[in-house]
Image (cartoon, rainbow, N blue to C red; front, side, top):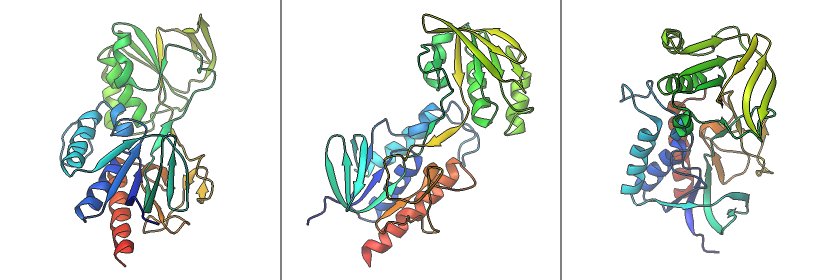
Length: 289
């Protein structure tokens, strides 16, 4: 059987695009598959200050710079939702592609807050939707690094930002926490648990917590991420995260994985890039042998 590609990379985030760059420069025929814009969750990050080479850069800007490298190398990107992988085939809702190797770089999806699915003014992306709430009052649920970054972005646009966090203190970089505390239009409510959400015609109007009631025009959720691997039936996972060895290889001989989709201790842009490099180099080695 003639295979369509040497390697198909599922995911066009920072890990997937990094792997593609390495493989293409190794003269392999590579394809990137995704069902969203290149960059993945990068496109939802307002400001990045810990990525080498940039004092400060927005997530969308970093995503575009990496995409430019991908585009300049002539790497093909196709769009479609991957629904199954089997027998060296990647099956999407649009086509079936055959390949020697596969690198899974799917990333993660935002964890949903219960009882919010029907609410029209609830968002999981400040960069995407903050302007809808210019000069209005919003709540930001979460207290990690990503939540603080979202809150800082919202504070420059919204009249007031109310941070609601379950923890007793911020969970993340102290520099971010200090910047949050210095914002006059940010109200911090930690050790705070949501009890009830009140709405009118599917529009959230009031958040009732153990520390009081808050009237809001909208709510942003930043309570972490979870893997999107339900469709991967035969790959070994731990709580949805893919288990790999030190070569980024899964239990299936021709499938590798890297980035935020794998089981690991540290989830950072820099670790995703490193894992993608390892995966790509090992794919190249196996194809050459």
